[in-house]
Length: 262
Image 1 (spheres, rainbow, N blue to C red):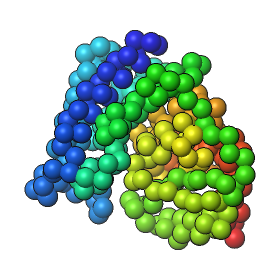
Image 2: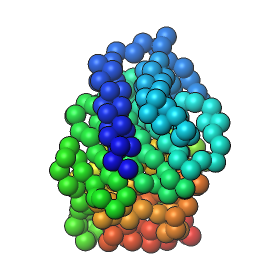
Image 3: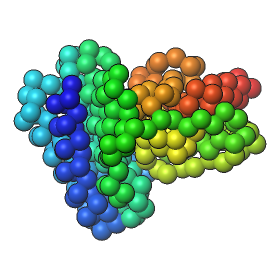
């Protein structure tokens, strides 16, 4: 497993160099609309090609699921899940919250995760059973055990606007229940920050596997808990995710379900 991790860190940092160099420099002529409020740039594509080619060079038998590709993969023993540039809208505007997210699944279980933030030169990584790290230093989720003292990260359901009414209800209720909320605009960053204790919890609707797979690995290895909104493990299928230290995760599951049932 160590060889897989080394390759993932190496290529995440390699792709991060061009992202750091180009952030905030893209013109509208270089932007493609996948849908309303959902963009892809030539840097997304460049980053993905860099990562995919590097992984295929080292592990040609492995399958790959990546955001900007067709994702025409077969059921695979080894499956890499890649977001080559999480936070594309931030990237376009020069808002410095972007990340490369790379995870590896083995027989359906996430066994490795790497999230690289090129603007801060921070590389978060984890292997199953080996703990989570930031630039070589062990990280843990926060120890905050009172919801009213907790800082919660979130993301708006801008791609799936049918969730906005329920999202607003949850957001409103949490404003009365927690210390504060933050929205960075890159789920990979949010999840990495849960893993290292910078925020205490996170929730979002309808994310894709490449948005969350690496972050799930980090949080679990850092002592945190990840689930769907029902408290189960269906987050990769539904995209609805709650994460946090054990106390805040439990609080968020209960609070969100309370709101959604009313």
